[in-house]
Image 1: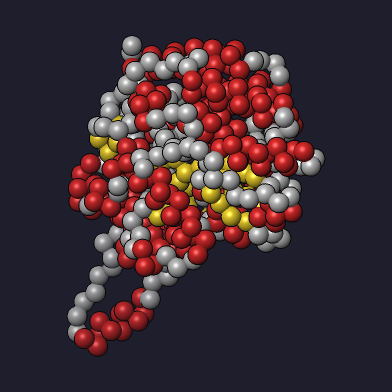
Image 2: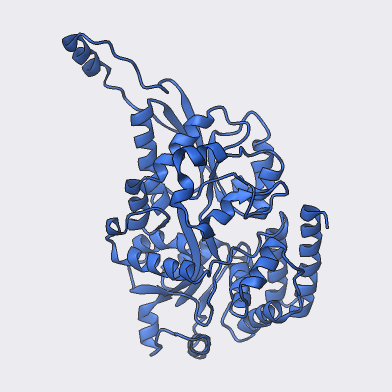
Length: 431
């Protein structure tokens, strides 16, 4: 479905004013042009709300129209390379960051390097160094150096959402250590309650697995895993612990075996409905939970016992190499970085990257942003488990499904993922 938002120009009023003043008038510089935009945020999400306003501001200031075509995350992920290599490419789109996604497209010549626009608009000054990592890629598509290929205007990270009413019902305090967290899981299980809302058919279970690995990891592990600094030991402490724990979670009833057939939406709606007391997932759920989880009190905390968490800058605004209106795309990006648009992200459950602190007034949003700031201050953003290779997302989903349904062991899973990881990395690096 295509949704066209157009600006109604007050031509009669302008013309009348011109006649009275004896001056001629001219239309905005971009009048008559159209910016074709894709993104996959829901209309009532923090980003959806902010970007809708950005569209209105863009149209008012430029005189151009925005042709917005909503897409799902999976639609864009699975078809981007084909669509962007055609004359059907949009002028600007939201795209997932990382080596396997934006990096891959950049290395294939499908994205426009935007270094000149970054300098012109001063975007680098608005982004902390840790948030710039995912915006720059070298000629092999490896993040962290090279040209700019995208701009994030929000951040994201994985944390723990919890149902305060269910915690109170079973006398469980908010855990501050991993042992306390596991004790809470056991208390729920002992009372016949499956504690963790999860989804094994999409990304959530892989992020939990990676979070468990990060609880035993440091920055050097992340650099090796994500940036190929050194070989990764797939039977080493971090990844063995993660796979063993995930199997243990299933065996002890912390995660349902039925999770293998559930998608992220199933996980989120089950937590929102009050069925599960805990959900380990991303800040991208925050705004929706605020609006929809109205039958119980809830809160969040960072994963106990871990200095690091899956997270990064948010997805990127990227400009396809085949875009017809690149300058318009840059103007739109710049509008999304303005304080008033950033404040909309922050006050509606998102994590802005360039907001004025005094503009964030919502208490729950302040909590969300404080947790994010805690992670960035301790260099705790560890990116995501599927980023290293273009096929690793599907491989992690398949491997964790097999572990949960009992058709593979933790050691076998790590061996399989290790082989797939090394093959994918070799394709990228040529080593």
